[in-house]
Length: 212
Image: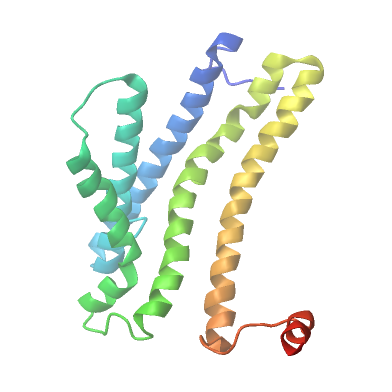
């Protein structure tokens, strides 16, 4: 088994190893979002440039969250209080949530052509998917160190760490797939025939009890 030469393979450095993997993932994500933001700005695709999770809003949100985590873990005591959270975390989340209607507004089209209710339901699932994707895409880089950690343990523990580590990563990726399926079921299927109203379901037993 080939082991990473840039990581000291000692049990005491486990957290450093995990943190290094997550840091590498975060840096790569920041670089790719920056590339996408630049390209959309160059193409004057302002909706994607400003409001996309892979645009300016997503980049500001991701950097702000990383700054908050580093400030908390490293104990830097930087002035990242409530105003910082509101402007650099909450506002970008709202912009990502309102990406489609704001993009339509820029293009001169109605913001909610299918009604606000349909937009809100779909937008909620999409926003949840976006936030979960940020987390899983970053943490998924832990798979880089699963084999290394397993090698540290050795023996029967090797297989335990190997199995549990890969299960952890697969569960995170599975959550992304699950959210996508729920969103598609609502938008592509339920929204075509489902209407609110009607009467509540009543079982045969409940109907007989009422008739007595």
